[in-house]
Amino acid sequence: MTYTFPPNFLWGVATASYQVEGAIQEGGRTPSIWDTFCEQTGTISDGSSGAVACDQYHRYIEDIELMQELGVGAYRMSISWSRIFPEYQGPVNDEGVQHYLRVLRALRSAGIKAVVTLYHWDLPQYLQDRGGWASRETAVAFAQYAQVLARAFGDLVDTWTTLNEPWCSAYLGYGNGMHAPGIRDYEQTLAAAHHLNLAHGLAVKAIRGVLGQNAKISVTLNLQVNRAASDKPEDIAAKQRADLFANEIWLGPMLEGRYDDKIMQATKEISDWGFVQQGDLEIIHQSLDNLGINYYSTAYVKQRHMSDSSEASRIAASHANPMPAQEYVEVLPPTGQLTAMGWNQEPEGLRDILVEMSQRYPGLALAVTENGSAWDDEVESGGSPFGGEIVHDPERVAYLDAHVRAVAEAIDLGAAVSGYFAWSLLDNFEWSLGYSKRFGIIRVDYENQERIWKDSGLRYREIARSNTV
Image 1 (cartoon, rainbow, N blue to C red):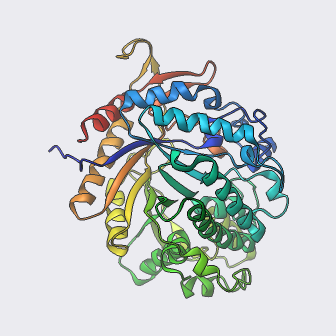
Image 2 (image 1 turned 90 degrees about the vertical axis):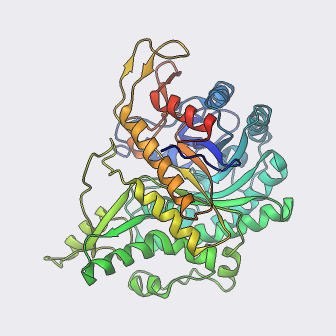
């Protein structure tokens, strides 16, 4: 069965600054927390960093030409904060601003809309030195940064996205330490979560203060699709608790102006939540034009039965699951054919979360802002319709087809989905996994920076150009 998407449906591709730009010491840029994290022994699986990455800082024209060939209408990119403000409370770096102006103007000339993420995890190190997201000061600094970008870029940006996956910033950065800045402190995790929420609200106000109410603003959340392992009450309760810390800690404040009381109750031994000040929730709760949803897989959970109640066991359980108060939630091993990340494939989860969010927030447009899969690709000589080498990646093609069809099913069920962004345009620096995992629909040869087409890129080209699946 062939499904045709709405005429104005937006097909796009996505990347993030630290994962693709490289040029970490060029253009006035100063270190981010990921530069610092990569220098620490044992933090990155292959000992690499984003120092060169895909060299998009210099090769953005080539990559925009790839987007044109794909036939996509939008590019979801992020800005490196420390390219704009290289120093604490320092002046705006015009060289950084001019770089992004060149990129944005090139996108406009190519007929590609710019969907700009203000924060995709690369916090300036000077702000981390002052407490990072555990400090309220970082949220205030983020608002100033947002205001500067709005003034500098104006209508060159189609959609402003405040944050990408604050769950990862808070829980992986400050909870289990798997991501930069590598801190393991659940009290800081909760403070970081709140200050990320606050930063979002302050940034929305700052952007609209410059560009007016017509500015299109969104936030991107990696809402988790948790499934109860059984219909037992304790497993259903485990699913609900997992949802609290994965999803409700963001949805409640941002879209409803409240924190669920059960979040406070579950974490009362960790924090008194004194970092929440009067008026914060009103600031966080801002009207949005779009909610971005990143989706890769589902999780099946059940109640964890702790046979050993020792502190060591509690710590071990906590490190396995980065969310506070989650020692009693066990995530079951995934089943079926797993991607190279060890993740399951359940496109129905994408359909379900889109339908659920559209029913919960009627009138709010949704977009799939990341979706994709990593596989162990092999390059073959010849065979590309554009000449040169090619990657045959049938697993990624199948994943792509199944998940785009899931979006179509969600629209049929009434979900207000406005667009789909493939993750990722390019293979890139995959955070703590370095260059060991490849998500791109275009391969990057990291030795010579050659871009090599994959079958999945060709398949996405068919989908985007025909608006059908």
